[in-house]
Image (cartoon, rainbow, N blue to C red; front, side):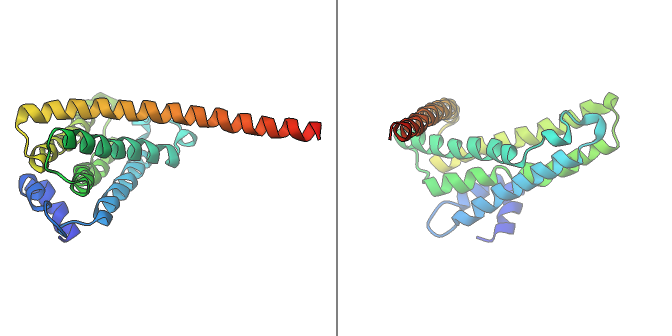
Length: 204
């Protein structure tokens, strides 16, 4: 499937989009990766062009690496957690479909966050409610597409979609906890090895 056509379809006909991406050779991994990277670019541009009155951080406080991590880690762990939970619950979606489908759920943010942010250049703080409303609308649009993805790819009923989503979020928390725990243990292990080598050198 053509990527530009897929972008148009997920915005205009999302139900049809998630039906169409099922099946062999209909989607490619690179399409999902490209959408996530473009979403990151849109995110960075929106941060940099935010009107002065609406800025919550100083320019030196903005880190591209941190912004990238805050986008990639939640999205990727969602894909893994949702795939794992759905597989246990007899879901029909394959990991590739979940990966690409979750990426394309970010398309509304990718397309509209910059135009919405441009409003901060002409709005005053008294009119911030307009910006906040549009920003929340874009976020809710993304969330709605994610729920639709879960329903269509796995062929679940609404109640099961909500249940699977909640369990997937819990799964994300577990993945993060285990990841942080392993990171802490590995850091301590490396520090122990370094200290041990230093001690051996001093005794040699």
